[in-house]
Image (cartoon, rainbow, N blue to C red; front, side, top):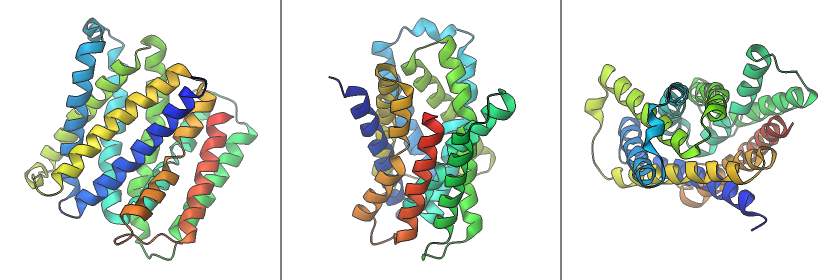
Length: 284
């Protein structure tokens, strides 16, 4: 099927978007601590079930596994916790575009630490993303500007984790292995932080549990579709399609969360501008 990689990438983006909407639905009945714990445990268990049947488990003893562990601690580990707090405070329609700014941090990291060349695309893409963030922050729905910091820090951490994950795949090109190890490391750091901060006592099974569990399954599927798309197609085609997930997130938010989230034109404009900037950074 000629368009299989593109189709897989779009499906992955849609699943990421739907997972955010489900988390927001769950937050109506529960809290972000429960969302982190339940979704990530579901995520890890489902990936391990797949890995047991399709992955040579001897690979787990490779020293290069530590690269995926490091990436998993950053994202989705710490980044996911910050994203869930952001979903709780400013909603799906604003969190998704802000977390999509991660390519700018990945590009800056590559320029300053990997000595990659600064191109016109990096400059233009960065400017577009900055303008997109400004549009979202000035939307008609009044939000505390400091609440945006959670999504932006999550994007920063995700941006740093991206080249680390790429380095790991250069040594061990097993996407399913990468997904399982990063998700497991993320669960370990999430549980540790919740325990250390005393928030694990706030985790509970309630009406939000089913939304968190389904969200975790969607994230697992999104990861697998993501890696399958990268395996079957070119990065320059797949990555820009993956960065469109904020547009799907806003659409699904309008469809399912219109009673709790007001989406104005500035949010749409900001999301489109951010996606355009992310695409430029990804392609060029």
